[in-house]
Length: 183
Image 1 (tube, rainbow, N blue to C red):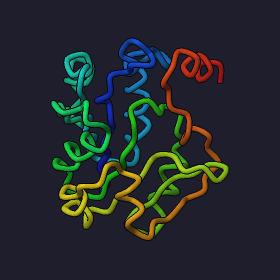
Image 2 (cartoon, one colour; image 1 turned 90 degrees about the vertical axis):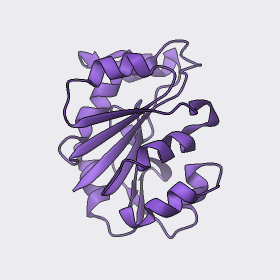
Image 3 (cartoon, rainbow, N blue to C red; image 1 turned 180 degrees about the horizontal axis):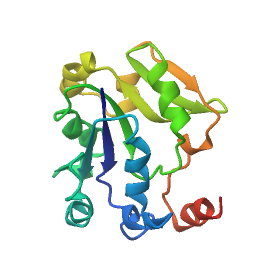
Image 4 (cartoon, one colour; image 1 turned 180 degrees about the vertical axis):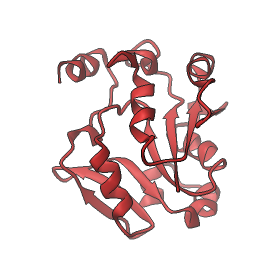
């Protein structure tokens, strides 16, 4: 089975409030992202940071979710990824918590591909989710590279073209959020 690392460690500085709790389809945004993964994963690891208490209150009763705090979240997303990867035992997806519109068909296509690292793309632009085979876990954890893209680029990775603009539609600003709600 596959696991997922959902990244929720940022400060939401451009939003000026915890964007993971914004309403999306009658539930908090991060729950839309998490629940879109459920048909494809047996475990979800949510990596928090500044807003740890808010998010842990939200997910505490869900047995499929493990919540872990990255105390060094200010060091960036790759640091949060490493915190989440430490808890994995299987192959895993990496996805920011602010990508709630990814279609089930996208996860399925990425899973059906056949390389150690796989990246979903829409109209030639790479996005999320990113899939990493568990055989690369120790290399990722010991990496001194500055970000996930640099780690990914060390390998022959597959770009999985999907008909899903959701792989690119993250929410950073109030305008991004309003645009997403209109769709």
